[in-house]
Amino acid sequence: MRRIHVGNALSAFGLGFTVPYLYVYVAQVRGLGSVAAGLVLALFAVAALVVLPFAGRAMVRRGPRPVLLAALVAASVGAMALGVSERAETVLSAAALLGAGQAVTQPALATMIVDYSTAATRSRAFATQFFLQNLGLGVGGLIGGHLVDLSEPTSFTLLFAVEAAMFLLLVAVMATVRSPRPRLAPEGAGGLPRIDGRGALRDDKAMVRLCVLGFVLFFACYGQFESGLSAYGVEAAGVSPSTLGTALAANTLVIVVAQFAVLKFVERRKRTRVIAAVGLIWAVAWLMAGYAGLGHVGQAMAGAAFVSTYALFGLGEAMLAPTVAPLVADLAPDGRAGQYNSAFALVKQLALAIGPAVGGPMGATLHAPYILSFLLFSLGISVLALRLGRRLTEAQDHPWRARSRVVGGGGAPVGPIASVDA
Image 1 (tube, rainbow, N blue to C red):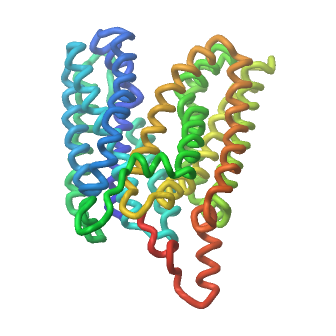
Image 2: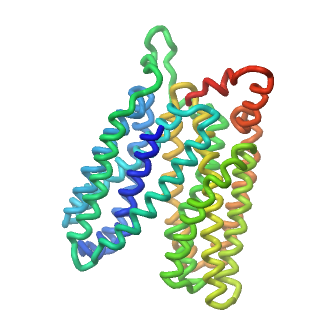
Image 3: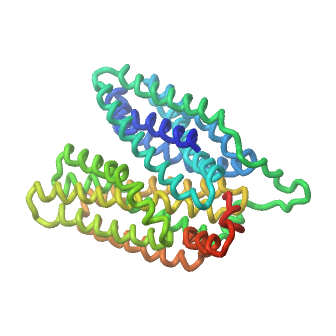
């Protein structure tokens, strides 16, 4: 588990070097223009949508580690190629390869966390993963910002080389990890019934509801950070680029500081009620954003309200990290954690592709409708979460309480609490 967490940190650290500067690199440094830069960003989402269904099935058959290693090699090659490419065709090809590798890396690492954790430790494991991801992205972005020079393309090549090296270093770390469980027999072998994974996902009503909830979560929050909300802040609230940077820093700082502070609170409560509480917190965040842009207040107050919006989003993210991913894992049948993680990652990518396309134009021009719409989306998160709770068992929705009852009855946790490995 330590090596998996080190791998998460390395991956995020490498991404932090390039993600904030990808648009300016393609559009300005390579001189390919805004259309090519937009296509590169879109390719990341498209590549994820293409490869994730296949990745899920591969993880069921082969396990997450081989899939992860292949994805990391592909991402490393894509990153290095992107750093040296000068023509639009090679830039787009490299971006597609990098995007596909990155998309598979996260569900594969999440599945490995599931394999090396128990129901008792899973929430803390995913909280640690989220903490290290944000810390790695922040540190990588900070260092990358001091290395980059818009007038010198080789400085960007260095950034992509560092990213590629981090992926290869992660390959070396993950190659030493061995599965803690014997490999499952192939589907249909040994007299076991063949299971249609996609059919099982469609028939799992709780997972379908969680995917709908996940789409709204990512659409209303992550899908707005660098598109609609930032456009709204500049156009409606009149915040400066430095204030926008401060807001993003506040978001990361709250996550890093609050992650483990909220963990014990979150662990002891129903997961769906925690998610419902996040919807209410984000509703307040959108009200703060509305106050910043529509409240006719001074520049200082507008800036403070806008920074508070991002901070409140960070608090909600810290509460979701030990909640949603473990719930996906606990819903998955034995041996299908990879498929469920990939399906949920696919939903996330859809939301992250649609969110900016919808929120960007609205945030820039339709200020009041934008705030009202996403305020309602946040309240919808609370409603969807509470409705999901009706379809979950106590072990799925409130594992801490279910585990306490078993232990209090005079024995070690048994049944689904102890044996769940999906």
